[in-house]
Length: 394
Image (cartoon, rainbow, N blue to C red; front, side, top):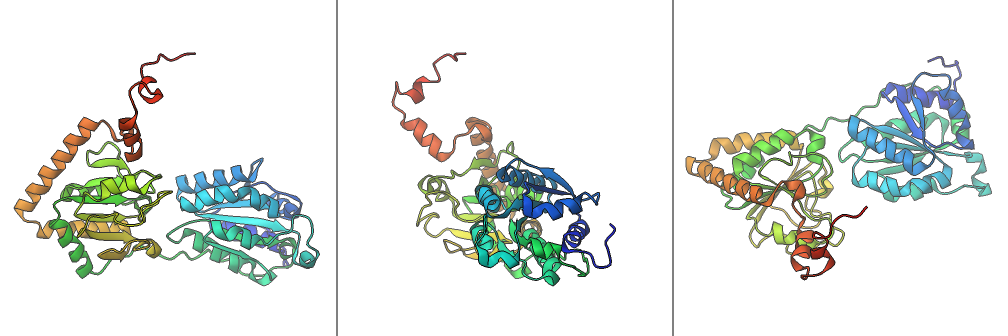
């Protein structure tokens, strides 16, 4: 990329994105981003993908980031454009999509004027992002961009926001372009803690796994499945949008409801040992405030998000660790200590769970706890009971 000896911030920004492997910018531009758009015409990558509204731009970037397991860059226009994107940014944060959201501003020199579309952009973005900031000096542009990229890609991943005043992008910039350093998080617990988790699972009579999307993000689906089969545990999903375990597997029981904690509690209190992995307890709209586990139940929580562990309820063993390596280590430790009798008990338990699953139909057709309650309570002759008998009309 040709860059003049005294290149401007807009070209430096594009060079930094290119150094980080960014191929596309999803966005909806306005006047204050015109200089950036002009610079884009001088380069092959990144390429601009235009959306007609900022919600769609964020949605496109969210899907791209999830499918490609990479960071995606979104450009929105000033305060109005950021306002349009807030709802979708909330979903991206809940879904932990690694987005770097850039918003143009008229310029630092206009701050005192309270001009059209002016707003405190970082304050607007803060509730729906991991980190929100504003570049206030031309010499810190690339440093801030690298921090934003690293933050978005560090578990728990999620969207970050950077406000870019136009005069920052127009100013000369001689910062070095350096690929962003993203920390390695493939960490596993010490052997003693792994052994403690294995010992709890070996003694379980009614084990249950509750898993979320950070299992898939770790690539730990195979490790989760092997451990569940070894233990003979039911597997339930919570905060579950990725394929964390095959829905056709007989141990997979479906997802806990996302609305009412009372309905989830009817399931979770059946277990005497619970392994939580890649989620928090619990993401319902109306969560239970107490008693989500049975009296005396032992709880193990594995997650790279330290805030998720014991966030709302205490656990017996919390492991801030990578799910893939940790589940593999627990499986190895458990295999070495299980007695023949414990192995047979686990196999018998897994067979019973599988038989129950066959009787209930495939997981995708099984009702959540809430829907099941509604169906059972529907009076004969109500629309719920009668609609199945009504022929379809065209």
